[in-house]
Length: 297
Length: 297
Image (tube, rainbow over all chains, first blue to last red; front, side, top):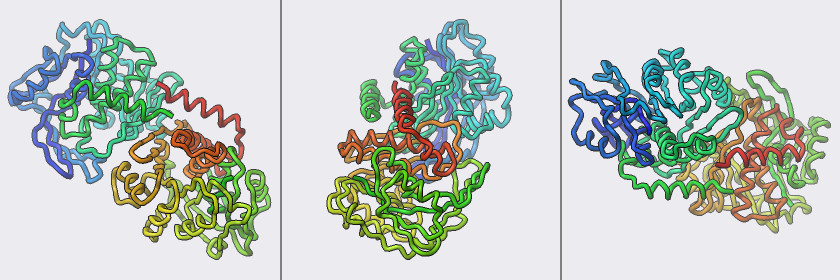
C-alpha cells in the first residue's frame, strides 16, 4: 500500500490566458491523484471547514481519506502567477491557515504501508512521520526552495531518512551548492539517499543510483496551459507505479520514471487538476506506448 | 563525400578556470573535425597569412584542404568569456579580418559532394553556395543570433534551400517568434526544412520530421571545462555519420543525432579542440555503447 503525506490546498493560479481562483491543489493532492491511476493511495493531509464538498468528492473518488483531517478554520491557500513563458512562477501569497496547527500522525490503517511519499513538507515533520511507519519498503521525499533556505540541515537529515529524493534541478543546485547535476546527485547520495531523481521540467529527468545515471526526456507537448503540479504528478506516478508492482528493483524504478514523465505531461495540458482527473487508464497506457516509440532509435 | 563550409578562427576563450589565447577554433573547424571521425570532409574556409603552421597541420591531419584559401592579412578572431556556470558566453570582440573579403566558391573537386554542411555563415552566402553543388543528397545549415537579428528574411530563405536545419533552442525561439519548441519546428518546416534539429545543450536535442518528434538526452558529464564548439561538433557528427553511411533515411538520421550528442559531449570535456583531436575511434564507439545502455529502460 501507498501513503502520501503533504499539502492539500485551495490554489489561485494566474496564467497569461486564465486565472483560476481557489481551485483544488497542493503537492499531496497532485501526487496522490497521479498515483491513484496505479494504486489506491492513502492521504495524510488537513483541510479547513471551508473545504468545498465538491473537492472532497474529487479526493474521495481517487483516494483513501482515513488520513484526512478537517480542522476548524480556513484551508491552506496559495496564490501564484506565471510569466508569459509559463516557466517562471511568482508567489503572490501563501496562507498556511489550518496547516499551521496541523499535527500529522499516521492512522493505524496506514502504518503498514510499504510505499510512502513525503511531499514538500517541513523536513522535520517528514523525518518524524516516516518513523511512524512499521514496514517501509520504499520511501521518497521532495523538497522546495523555502525549506532549503530556512532549514537546510533538516532537509539533509530528511534525505538520510528516505530511500529516494525527487527534486527539481534548480533546487538540487541550491541545496547541494553544486552547479553540475551529477555532482548534486553524488552529494545527495553521500547524505544517504539511495536514489536521486532530478526533475528538469520539459527536459525530463535524471535518475541516479550508485554510479549509474538514467536520463529520460520529457514527453514533448505543443501546448502547456498550466504547469502547476507537474513535478508532484511526476513523483506520484513514480511511487504509484512502484507500489502497484510492489517492486523496487532499479529496472522498475527506471520504468516508474517514464510513468512520471508521462503523468507530468498530462498534468500541464489542462488547468489545475483537470489534466489528471479527466484521464482514463487507457490514455496513460497509450501515451506510454507513444513515449516508448518516440525515444526508440 | 562531405563538404563543410564555414569559419576557421583563432579564438580567445575565457573560462572561470583558464584562458586560451588565439587557439584554433571556428564553427567549420569544430564541425569538420568532428565529422572527420566518420568520413574525410572537404573544408571551404579562409585563413590569414598569420595562421600558425601547427594549426594548418591539425586541419590537414583531419580534412581535405583543397577548399582552404589563405589570404594576406589576419585570420578571423573571436574573443569570448564564459560566466561562472559556463552556460552563458559573452562576446568581447569579433574581428572579421580576412573573412570580410572572402568570396567563397566551391572547388571543382567538391562539386559532386552528396553531403553539405553550411555552418553559421551569412545566410545569403550559404544560400548562394549550396547552388554551386551538382549532386546534393543531404544539406544542413546552422544559424546564430547575429544573422537572425540582422538578416531574418535571408535566414528563412536559406532554410528553404536546405534539407535540414540545426539550431539551438534560444535561437529557434528568436527566429520563429514562438515560445514552444514544437511550434518553432513546425514553423521552420513550413518554411521548407524537411528536418529540424533543435539543440538544447546539456539537455540533448529534438529532431522533427513531418509529424514525428525524436527527443534525445545529452550524454551526462560531471565536468564541463569548455563548451565552445559543442553545437558545431554535434552537427558535424550528424552529417559525418550520414555521409559515411551514405544514407538519409529517418532511422539513420535518428542514429546520427546520437552521434551528435556523443561528439558534443567529448567536445566540452577538454579545452578548445582538444576534446575532439585527442579522440580515437574506439573512444567514440565505446561512448555510443554507454549512451545506448544508459537510456535503456
